[in-house]
Structure formats: C-alpha cells, structure tokens
Length: 364
Ligand SMILES: Nc1ncnc2c1ncn2[C@@H]1O[C@H](COP(=O)(O)OP(=O)(O)OP(=O)(O)O)[C@@H](O)[C@H]1O
Ligand code: SF4
Ligand SMILES: [Mg+2]
Image (cartoon, rainbow, N blue to C red; front, side, top):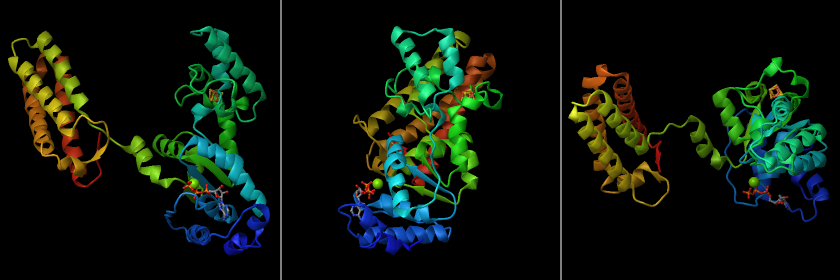
C-alpha cells in the first residue's frame, strides 16, 4: 500500500475521490506521526484546531496498520457518524480489506429475552408504553443490529427501553434461551472478529472498570487504541474512577444521627449539639464556595478567603462528632452505624485534601 504522504498527495486517492480536496500539511504530519506511533507501539497525543481534518489523519494510519485497532469517540452520535460515514468512505478510498465493527454498551441493544417477557406479562404503565413495546418487537424482527439508535419509531427515552434491554445483572448469558438471537452477543462477536472497532469513551471506561460490555475480551486482543476528542477523557474517567465527598453527606449524617439520638440516647445532649455544629459547618463551607453553580479547581477555591477556614472547621466538627458518637455507639446499632459514617467522612475529607494538594480535585 502507498505511504501516508502519497495517500494525501495532490494526485493520490483522496484527491481523486473527494471534490474540493486540498493537501493540508498539518493533516499529513499528524497522519505520519500516528503511523509512527502505531508502528513503534508508543503513545502519541495530537492537538489541532477544529476542521483540520483529524478524522482522516487517524483513519488512514489506523486502516493501514496490520494489527487490531479500537477507535473511541466522545459520544454515541459521533460513533455512529464515524462508523456510517467517514470510516467506510476512507476504507473505500484506500481499498483497504479491513473488517469494521461498531460496539456500544449493552443498554443500547434490544434484549429479545426481556422484551418477550415484558410483552408476555403485558404489565405496562400506559397504553403508550404497551404500543412502544410492540413497536420495539417489530423493530427487533427486522433489524440487523438491534441498536436502539436505529429504532426511529420509539423515543430513545421511552421507559419501555428498560424492559426491552438487559443489564449486566439480569442477563442470562449462555443459559439464555434467546442466546442465538441476542444482539449484544452478536455485536461482541462481530467486534472480536473485526480489524477496527468503533467504541465510545463511556463504554471504554465502563468496561475497564466493570470488566463487562465485551471490551474486556477485546482490549487484550488489540494493538492500538485511538481516542478521538481525547480532551473529554479526564471528565469521563472521573465518572468511573473518581471518588466524591459532599457536604450533603454531612447534612444527611447530622439528620440521621439526631433522629437516632432521640430514639436511643435521649440523655446524650452532645449528639444533638454536635450534629447541629457539624451541619452548620457543612452549610458554611457550601456558602464559602459561592452561590453560583459551577466547577472549580482546588486552587481557585483556595483564593477565596473563607474557604480554607471553613474546611478546617468542618474537619474539626466531623472529628468531634465522631468522638461523641463513639461514646454512645454501644447503645444502639443505629448510633454505631452513624459513628462508622462519621469516621468514613473524616477519612474521606482527609483523603480528599491530600489529593487536592496534589492537584487531582475539582469542586462543584
Ligand atoms: N485535506 C482535506 N481537503 C478538503 N477537505 C478535507 C480535508 N481533510 C478533511 N476534510 C474535510 O474537512 C471536514 C472536517 O474534518 P474533520 O471532521 O476530520 O475535522 P476535525 O479536525 O476532526 O475537527 P473537529 O475538531 O471539529 O472534530 C470534513 O468535512 C472533512 O471531510
Ligand atoms: S443473553 Fe442476555 S442480553 Fe442476550 S437475549 Fe439473553 S438475557 Fe438478553
Ligand atoms: Mg473531529
């Protein structure tokens, strides 16, 4: 096959196939660097302005590589667009004999087993839901993929999709009587057999985290992973690997502990006063962040003079409250549980501040 510069040259296959095609040096450079990274099994990060033509720049080396490639896009819409438009087009232009597949999370595919069960039960909340279920059933008989994005007759937010799709917990797997007609399994099989698989960042990270969704088998078999819209990765990765601690948890603990105290340790007035002080400290911390909704870095918050003292006070109040609950913990299981929650909160807050000092924290 031709080299990357030849493919993008003024008399190359792109120029012949695309009206208005112009050689863009940035695009050629990017494609060459990606090809080199694939060849050398190394990491390469590219940033280029919108409209540069990054899609062709990564598709050309991806389709030219001999190994298995995963391309991950930012959203399911971009995933569909890439799979249905740019990818087949570039594959045709390069005349590359490459098998391609699209893989989404299992919630995107009709599950014949649960759909049939829901239809047999017939217990739908409304006539509209029942009609939607019948529409999905018609769709399931004609679709190749079972991908709900192709079922235009039913709104993607219809509650019936919950009964017409599977979850990791309720899927019967190989014991399923409908295994042969299963769209999830078919999509995974296709992905395993393909040379280039298009996924999305959510699926990628959910799978790394949960070891499900078919990617667990896919990833080890794969030589190259390309993340398009990679600037979204920190956000998506935080969703799956992140940890959070909130003032709402403190307020909840104060409420529950006050109630437990009134039931099982009425004579211990410290529980009531300690809970109140801790709750106030949580609310003051929330106020110190300001009323505007938004996300801030820890450094931005440190610039607000009220923030650090409010956080310190909350630390102290949670610690004091944990000590109060410890003295009463033996009196009732409910108090014991609140004590454990207070200890966890204390630990979480400390951990959060350690990570914040290392620059890993966002606040909202
Ligand atoms: N060399 C080229 N000559 C002419 N048109 C091109 C060339 N390369 C790409 N295009 C076209 O330019 C448009 C933008 O390309 P693409 O979507 O890959 O941009 P991008 O760099 O990914 O931008 P964004 O950051 O917005 O995603 C597409 O319509 C594509 O077909
Ligand atoms: S194997 Fe799981 S997803 Fe597939 S049809 Fe059976 S229950 Fe549904
Ligand atoms: Mg793009």
